[in-house]
Image (cartoon, rainbow, N blue to C red):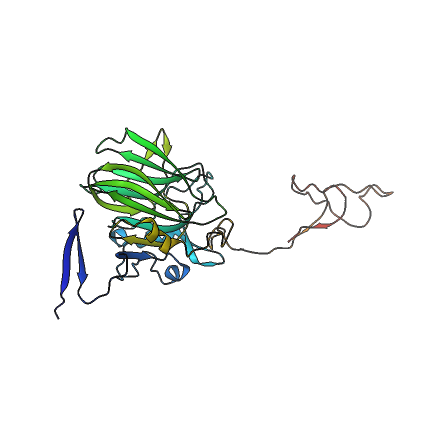
Length: 321
């Protein structure tokens, strides 16, 4: 069997397109719905357009850090909210390298607005062992962290002044990665408006990862960790070319960000019930002696209650189920 394909270059990348296939406009290349249906079918990182599994190294264990949201079949939760110390989870749930110049997604940031949580990471022309620009959300503001090649101790933070909705609402948001010959964060579309920010430290972008760094990397800024994204996500779309404000609007304005207000509850946030028990507990208070000095004369024996029982009433008290 022979297949004809069209191969072309764009900003240092190579793309192929089978001839005869109609391209979705504007140049849509990857769709990741991130729904409960994909979770149930073990297809969380499957590109809906190509059918390709985007998991890095086919690491099925990465799906263990993604959860269904109770009552919402159209979104998933990336990473558990917290670790044993009630901090954001630092486990990574990342796909393999992606390629494109614009990104749209819907997000709800979770319970840690004061922690920087990654939305995506752009890597320079040398790939994963390269300079990088990390785009995160902190205090509901979009911020960036630029790390030069081999200089992890010199990270530059930039605040954009662009804010997403707070934690009881979804945010439908879009990003452009390049402007002219430079790469980085060129502009952001949110709440019906497109704003240029022109944070473009990369001369060329090789690939990007969404929601975290690669599995081998960690990032810090002023002794504080930059976490993988902890929150709800759905409808991730990647485009070959930067989008105009009108194109972003046509894609994102169809969503109602007020729907499903409130913090996402996950299917596996708590454990299940193990057992039900009924215990008959008797007071530890000694009964008054009878005339012969032998207890209360009705044959009861003294039973010692646990010290935290709080029962001093002298009557039999069944524990609540």
